[in-house]
Length: 173
Image (cartoon, rainbow, N blue to C red; front, side, top):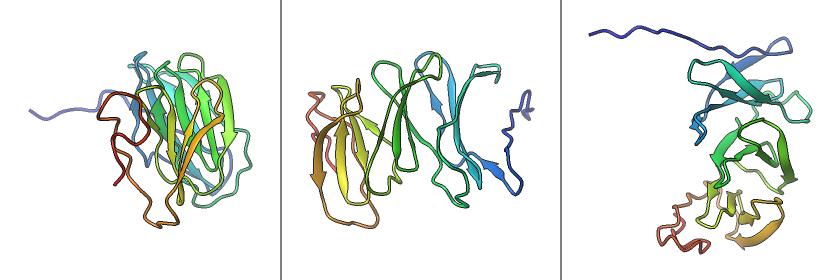
């Protein structure tokens, strides 16, 4: 049997010559929200939480300048405490998963083209073009850094296969 679209949600821009795009995976959070990373050419990207009827629950718009014609889309993960970890440009944000309020934000040196990975201990693992860093989930402060030296293609972080919270116990590819 053929399916029908029963509901649709679109995302607008605040500037001319802007195009909203969903180019990275959405996240189904533990509280049931559908968390959508919205990229916008020439405008500020955002993270939008929807309920299952596609009504907006909250919208997070970072305090950054617009104008990048090809920004990385927001990359998302959910922390062990239910916070939404969003990487937007050179910043990592911890967003309250229920309210959309910022818990903390921190800047990271180097391009961050990859989504975050959450360790078994809650540590937020970020892969840049030259480092793997771990951030404390409560504060965003630097916990650890591993330098692997300018691999242009980046890396893939494998989840913590041992379940012991050891950074890299899942491995890097």
